[in-house]
Length: 299
Image (cartoon, rainbow, N blue to C red; front, side, top):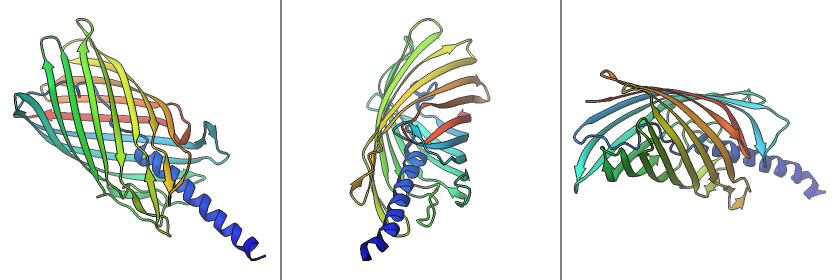
């Protein structure tokens, strides 16, 4: 009788923690480092760079092994990403370092509408990229980048949805781009992201750990003229299985995505409009729409 009385409470807590881990996985780790048009092109040295990105994302419904749950929670994410960097020469190679800080809001809805909205600063990212090979005549570039994200963002263990992740993460990315024809370039990249633990999950401060997240991406970049370019990127994301207090959740990602980009490079800076969505989702939220407006300036 005693065990029967305790079981419902323990079961509910376990389910709540499991759902929390899935939501954290999707909202904080579903996207690795997306490569945008011109990201793989080595910049000229000794330049300052500023960029701002307005990012709107909509997620609807949660999935387990590709099956949609009966409940339909939604999540709307709006953020501004501010980036400041500097290019330089080191050992005869081109390098670029920058800091990036997001500010934004997560608004739950649908069956999750009772959960509070979270807003504020996001997690600060420090990054450095190096180009071991850069040939502007053949438009061929090989770049390697490292990212370190620090837990500076808004976070509360009293709520499910948080703008910050409350953990350290790191990412190593390798990318290659070359000319395929006079007006067409081909780009491909792969990266691996590692995660530190979050020791403050839920009101009981459970420990969330996560296996590495891997992303492969490939796509063409077509230059209509010296000012206007368009691009299409296919991304495959896998890995990132979570565990709560050492118990695996068996929720490894296996997600197919695409991202379309239109770019205008002018004397006033570079303007970019992007649209993307998930093609297939195995675990967590399905992103139904991602719209991005970017602006970058070198000075």
